Length: 422
Image 1 (spheres, rainbow, N blue to C red):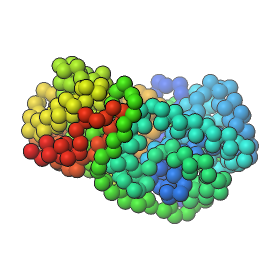
Image 2: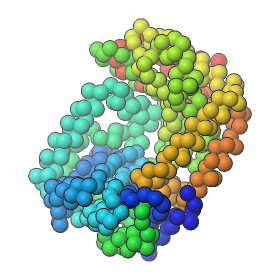
Image 3: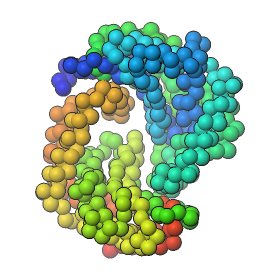
Image 4: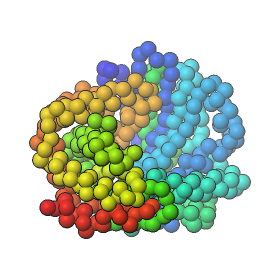
């Protein structure tokens, strides 16, 4: 898509509005993206970002919880939200003629939420159920243990859902105080993509977000990757293992090489880990790698679920692949990884929701909207030597291991570090 379709306006309050007009679509995705998430929370209010996300839909001075859901669904629209380590998002997808309603509702829940006691207590129970469900899902909760081990004793490592005892005691004042501190216009991007005119969205943003108070936003503590080992024995059919390392942050010159490394190593059915560990050896049903960049750090991790007997073989074979990829990458597999990454990028541009989110995140992370052609050029320019170099940089660093289930046969951190250093 041509960059002529993208427009950005920053209001005197600091609120940025970014839009992209997408020809031949009949819908609009509209959202407010706040650069505050779990890592911005003090330890005493861990889970506040996620609790706020829930409470935003539970009533305003103009609408009760039922009206919020009913109004958007009356026009066939969808409304949702999510909380992450560094950001929280509230968004709608509607037909183009209902864009004004989407802006009205998102603005309403972010500026007029009431946090009434009855709704707060009800949602507290819902979140406690969510925490319980996560704890009962080993291939989900193992990632929380991995994150907490990789970033020990700091906000970056704490769970997004919060700890059960903290959620039980969290009061209304903690939520409203956190919202006042972190939900300012300088910390927020209003983004929209689809069948729209920038001027119309700009006017909607002025009308519905104009009451946000402009104030300085506190910076989070710097991320400190620590590494380490977490091991919990549970009576499960499988042991769930996450092995990871410090990766690269968003703005690293190695970011595209790291994404390609993840893709060729564990990004699909043709990847090294899938072929060697599942197809050739039959050790797992599921194995994959991923990169998770943050503002000032990042993670590169591999997940696998395997049987108790297979666990002893799984980790050594995985380590062999991590060593081999540091000096043995072929042009063919790199080109295949480039094709996968490029296709994923272009496919995402066909969705108004994906494009809306990309606009907001690119502005918040990079301070500009990155042209698609620029990203394609950078992916194409990555060399075999650069992939091998970033693999060496990542895999020779301190590892993090999280193992949940019948984990007694999973090799320990000392063995892993020794094999990677050899």
